[in-house]
Length: 165
Image 1 (spheres, helix red, strand yellow):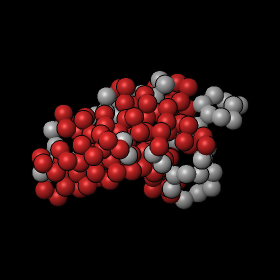
Image 2 (cartoon, helix red, strand yellow):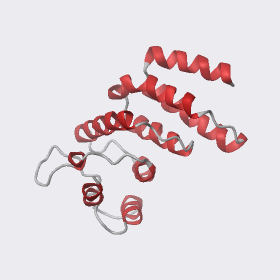
Image 3 (tube, one colour):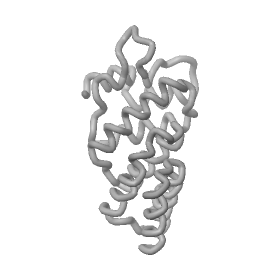
């Protein structure tokens, strides 16, 4: 397993591919659940560090998978990584507001609830400004509304994030 991870890390260090990194971390998370084997934090940190330069090229779904898998592995990304992650995710969601599926949105909320790095206040956007990302504008019904209401206890996510930052 160590040789396989070393080869994967070498490849990711060259490519900085968020899609490949998200797939690798997802597989490692499944391996952890199935075989109770978890990479040491140093290796997981090295994988994330190799992907950090390529975050801007990642799709919103891949960005969610990356963080979700890290949280499933109980690995806390370092603060500099998370600050870059928040900036990239905000830009991607502002550019493509409907880019996340309901499942991705739920995984993102779950993952963010476990990260020990609160997003900057400006991350949730300011009221009245169209460029800001608001994770919650609860419209309609179904899975999205249910996930939001359960995750934040009935408050809009943006309000919770602003109070936490």
